[in-house]
View 1: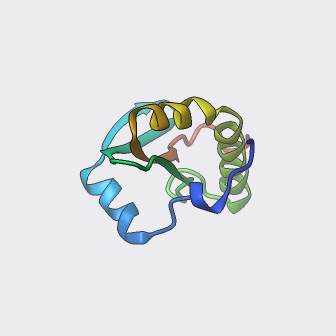
View 2: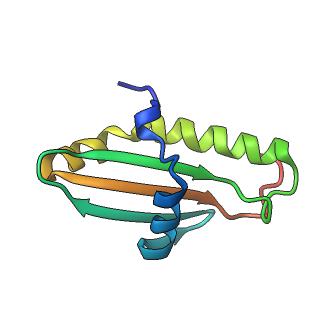
Length: 106
């Protein structure tokens, strides 16, 4: 229930490119969210990619900590998204990016 399994991770480079090209986005500082919602007939799934670019966080330690915290918060709160996708037969792809330079040490 609270696991972040391989099926929930968006790993395909083609799908990630497609998400960034055709997906919609919004900024909720310090996070930038890109998403793409597709209507499916019998299946529903939610896939997520977590990003902490080197452009905003110079040190790998800070990037890794930011990604760990984002994964953990998604893992604990993902039930609402998954139930919404199942009720409406949707395939949802989400990219969560940490875009702050102020939080160099989280």
